[in-house]
Amino acid sequence: MPTATRGAAAVILLGALLAQAPSAAAYEPREPSGPYVPPAAPGGPVVPATTPSTAPDDQAGPETDPTAGPTPTVAPEPDPAALPAARSWSEVAQQVAETSPGDISLRSADVAQQSTQVMRCFKLEDENYCLGLGFVDKVPSGAQLSEAVSAPAVSAQDRAADGSVVEQDIATGAQSPAAFVSERAAMPKTARVNAELEEMQSAWDGRDKARALRLLDDNGNPPPAQPTSPTPTPSTPTPSTPTATPSTGTPSTGTPSTQSREAEPRADGTVPPPTPPTGKPSPPPVNPPAAVKTLPASKYIMKGFQTSQEKGYWCGPATFQSIDWADDNQKDTQASWAKDLGATTSGTAISAMVKQTNLKTNWDIAAGTYIVQNVGHWTTQKFFQVHQNHLGDGAPAPVIEHVQLLKRYFPYLAFNHSGHYQVGRGYDRNAGTIGIFEVFNERRFNSRGNVTDGPKNIPASALFNATLANQFKNIGL
Picture 1 (cartoon, rainbow, N blue to C red):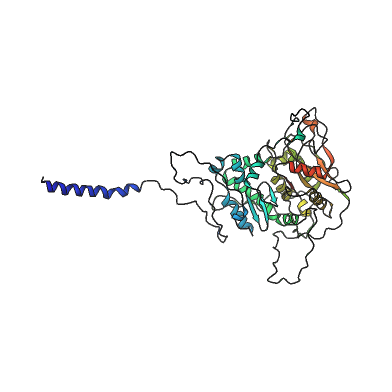
Picture 2: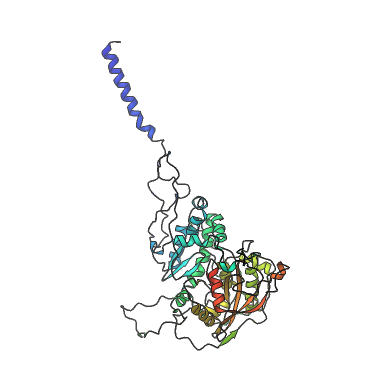
């Protein structure tokens, strides 16, 4: 072949090879252009997308240098300002579903990082609610949430004269923050979102009560009454309408219906919380605080309905057995309540105690929807006054006490114990005490323990400090 002809053929062949090169790139994997943003629900608000701290499940992360070491992942601190205040239940449900972390990213995080992803905070109109913690006056930082799931430091008051730690006996059954986070993180995402929605449903229904409690001053007194105009003007904001409607019927004396209607799955696979059971009146709305009527100097309820827990980790079922028994005069077994409360050897969640109080009793008809309320920024005076308001008015109802069962607060004990539930059932203003049903009997589980169950009167300051000693720092009311 002539030289010129061979050269032309080579050029043609080279061009053909170059023309095929781009088609090979079509088989190379592409990196995602950004985080996935779930579509808004039909008719729902548009929620600003936030950049997750870890790549969502089934999505590749940003391109990194393969020779570089692993980059530590820092979960974002909960900040309700990152999301708009929810003004409807549909907005709450959308925010909960869209911010719930994926299974892989959650389970690959350490406990401190998991705490900020599980105990997320939301703004319900004007009130802040954090999963697990309840309604809070101040939103905790990521560092504070991490501290909550860490083992509590041993106080000097819990050490013997030689400096050794006072003997710690069995755990009595209130779930710790670390166990709460671990339990939620182990759930598949669909089950976790459903559990979060159930907790948030009680919070949404009880937001008016939370507002009333927040507006009390440090002594537990409501703010001065503000003059109201008979006809609101455009410049005067009108209060939001509560979702609950006043009940005109009398509470039933029998056991309320426990059957709830199943909801249809959503498009994303999650299932909304079941609708409230039929046959039970709705709790009355809680109005903004007004002048408190004179309360009796002393008031006790539930006489004769004390119980004693049958297993070491059943303080939740025993406490709820007492509360329900006094409500309908029917003493159901602790085993049945353990099942309804989801109690395990790790304990019972306070959100489950509140949920079942609203679902299975009529105490919420008397006192309004029960809520989980954090008391970390309260004073002893406010704590005591709230108990008097809840137990001493015309429709008294028990308080779900959530304490750390330590000898320094409860001197009838022989040993220190764990987080614990008790029934708040009265007060004596002159003595400065709060009446409780202690459901834990040390002697039953330890031959060296004391007989400790039954009615007790605890100084309000001691019960408040025992509540603060618990890492959750909350009560149910």
